[in-house]
Image: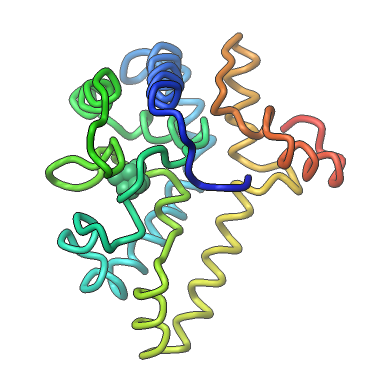
Amino acid sequence: MGSMIRNSYQSYHEEQLEALLMVAEHLGPQGSGVRRELGDMTAGYVSFRSEVDNFLSENFSDICNDKCYRSNLSACCSREGIITFFADVAINLLVSGPGDIAALRAVLEKENRGVKCVYLGNNGCLWRLKPVVCEMFLCDTARNKVFGRKPALMNNWTALKKKEKSFTWPDRPVLFDKIESYFRAAGFSSSLMYMHNSPGLLRVKKRATIRDA
Ligand code: SF4
């Protein structure tokens, strides 16, 4: 995938907003058939994210606090243009309410003049289920402090990273690819569909002879 960071403010906002509106349109109202189908498809991933969340809360909450991510020293949330997969957008909207979606839309409809991520609000990340790249990122300071103190936790983290790949790394049929295919089959297309348009990921799929999820 290369860099986590993209450069163009304008196109970043546009592509994020486009994906958000596309997903919101296709999901339809609460209780719709599409929501039910995608809810079933993503249940295992949502449960994995709870597992990660519990691990991070138990072991990193004292380090990864509000003061840290608002400082310019922190490596997370302090850059504009974080990579989000189309599946990140879809899964987040599935677990979001109308107010959450309106808040995301509002920040994408105005220019981000700050140095922080456009999605960083007054109370933290505006996503209900933040992008997987953000969730699975630990800065060096945090890693060194926590794993230095309790090296055995490194094994737990490695296991979680491995599990993450089983949803996101297309050397086998994975959920993130499947979600893109689901929306493509319904006639939608987005630049965030990296499983279908990233040369690197397409090479991974080709090597694994995965043609479509
Ligand atoms: S999307 Fe959320 S978690 Fe990720 S960098 Fe932005 S504010 Fe931080």
